[in-house]
Amino acid sequence: MSFELADDDDLDIRRSSHTLPRSERERWQSEYVRRLIATDFGVIVAAITLAQVIRFGGPAATPLAWPLPYEVGYTVVSGALAFTWLAFLAIGHSRSPQVVGSGTEEYRRLVSATLRLFGVLAIISLIFQIEFARGYLAIALPLGLFGLMLSRLLWRIHARQLRGRGEYRTSVLVVGCAEAAQAMANAFAADPASGYRVVGVCIPDGLNEITEYFPGSSGHTFSVVGDDRTVLDAVRRSGADTVAVTATDHLGPIELRRMAWELDPIGVELIVAPGVVDIAGTRLTNRFVAGVPMLHIAKPQYDRAKSAGKAVFDLCFAAGVLLAIAPTMLAIALAVKLTSPGPVFYLSERIGRSGKPFRMIKFRSMYVEADTAVDALIARNGGNPVFFKMKDDPRITPIGKVLRKFSLDELPQFFNVLRGEMSVVGPRPQVQREVDSYDGEMRRRLLVKPGVTGLWQVSGRSDLSLEDSVRLDLSYVENWSMVLDLLLIARTIGAVTRGAGAY
Figure: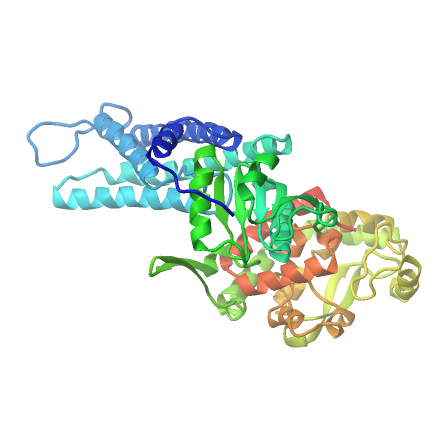
């Protein structure tokens, strides 16, 4: 690979070129950031104005209490506060193109910048004996922060819609050894909402008749446009505006630094992936050792997923849900009883934490004695005997199809939560034949209670392969947090409402 360091003339050109977008990615990112600036300004001004109106009734308010001999009205204070708040958002890089539009870092920076601002105000009031009206700040702070986060969320929804129409996309060239490049390309393809579109792959073997196309998962195929020594040529051929580098033997620290210098003038962003998968951001910590960036990975969260706090949350949440949906459950029970002979509930043996079996409660969605026909269906349809699911299952009753589509048959599982056999959020409940096939790694799913919902529920449900189901369950067990549980509960509502992947 040949990279040359830039001379002084190149540096001058590079500095001046930063004032204009140098790629399609930089163009839409600049447009997106300008919209964020406008909405941030509008939200902050609206929040502070509303706080002044509520607290003082309008612009004519009691002057600011401070030791100087001249008066300052709260209209001036509001203007200064709005300007300073916007400055703190800018200083905190809350609109950095690297964080806006996806992930939680954007929201974290919003909260951090806002709390810093009001921390500075508290220090100023103590040092200079300035008494801000507490009610005024108490309204402006939460109202403004809520408005900022809501506006960012709405812009994300808008950006997602544009990406669905082929706009606001980032064209990525993946560079690395075959296995690592395949994993990274699949990760980008599996998350289209992130806006990354793989336009080519560079692997050590490079272009030849065998590797002209690079196979991915779920039917995706990626074009091989070069090897990891000819990245710049591959960028030009593929039209990529971002290069994502993962594990490769040919690119060391010196080569990566030179690559960054060469990609910068043409507006191409460089991403270096550490090569770890299914690790939550809360377990990752950046640190520098002797000038070398290191990524520290905290231990898996098995023990925290079994905490007393999670158990208390499960009990309270399940009790509240059962009280709220009691009329709905009564209507479902009548529908099941009146449309097909047999009991209202179906008790299915599942394997819980530490391999202990329990009887999982569901509304019956199949005809009586449907379990006796499962072996014949597996043999006839060639299904996986360990993880058997089929569309248009003849054993399902007409009302059962509706219940399964919207997961209404699973509502009685909250009784299992009250009995301590299940959790609100957790791995998919497993049957004995699945557990019998587990290897050492897969048995980690049994370290925590199975859940009424989980990553599997919001990521495809019955459309998931066995491998994807296991991977998601293990990811949940290793990365558990209370925030993750709350996010999955919120996402479950959308997944169930759409009814996708359920049968």
